[in-house]
Length: 445
Image (cartoon, rainbow, N blue to C red):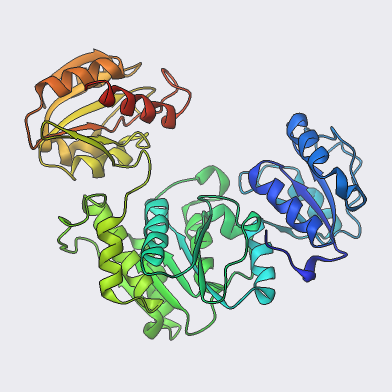
């Protein structure tokens, strides 16, 4: 794990003891800090307590202490150095914000603790990736290219294992961090050697005063950089283009790489990076890796061998010349639209628990659809929306849709699960739905 003498003897309150919170507590305790921890789930709280019982002197709370009502808890934060919260805690609504403000205690996240520990770690670099869409793919792609090039790398932030729970890299390593706006909000000193912004579109507006405030959160990733550190920005939307213009006006043109929309690339050698959205993700990854000094030959090898991420346009199998693609992570029409543009002839499986009553965002991809197969709670509504646009089959279940699409698809065509819906009508989550798709494809024999 990552530790720091900077935390020794300090006092921290940690809110949320799931994966990142538990890793934070362990790192702080191992560094000699005093820790007061809470979790709404008393079993989670208790389990962590007993795992750390050998360090009982470093802990100040009792097993089972809960944060179900921060306002009424008799907590005196006098003398605490920080409150460390999970990015999932809505600071605009949660009482922890007022309580911390009352005692003048800063609220931070595990990424800020990582930033504080960097001075004691072997010489390294950090790449931070943010954006409304494409963060996970671009982060994983940069990490894969680095590993392909033989450079030690760690994946963390909003993807993979908690960063504080991972062992420090040897000298010359690179930490690749996926950063949500929430995580950026909780750090004030993360100086990324390479900062990447993919795009900004309306999202998470329940956590911000307005869209401009959400965009400003993304912009802070660049404000924390030292001059001379690289910035890679997609300029396909006005807010992102505005941030790039601000950096240029501030004299950072030499640090800045702009990724323009609609760039033509030969993606035929990158099987896991199909579609115009992945062209943009790839361009951002290429620019970031070039800023790190990776030679183009190594970058090309990484692009060609990148396996993709589970449930995000994941190539499951090719049977009798038909490609089967699992895009279960596409839980709304906007996230399904890129997949429909990625393949020329598609047997489209869609449906589930609808988030909206239309598929307008998918319309540009309709000419690519050979036939649609609707499933789940939204199956009938989507069937009615699509009839007249394309042939439609009301399949009902995912297994039935896979069997029918496989029987009707011809070599060179694609059977695509890209539901444009949440999964909760038939599955516990999108991952379970994606696994059911894999299982159904395997059962075809």
